[in-house]
Image (cartoon, rainbow, N blue to C red; front, side, top):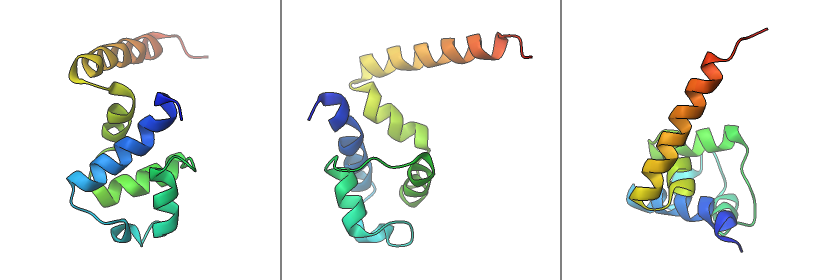
Length: 96
């Protein structure tokens, strides 16, 4: 498994554990088996499913993505700078 492929599962597991939640706590939005397969990188969730999982964990989906793609604090700061710049560029672009 590449580090990118491992990033989301590791972030999901880290947030779940930091919130003190068992896999069973997600029973309203996911089976324990499905959540386990996400945490092991065997499946990839839809954006809708990410939102549902984040609701259970009481975190914004971007928090989960920042953990998955941001790495350490220094890397995360660079990521946030890039996202801010890209958002500004996209918002400044003319619309049809």
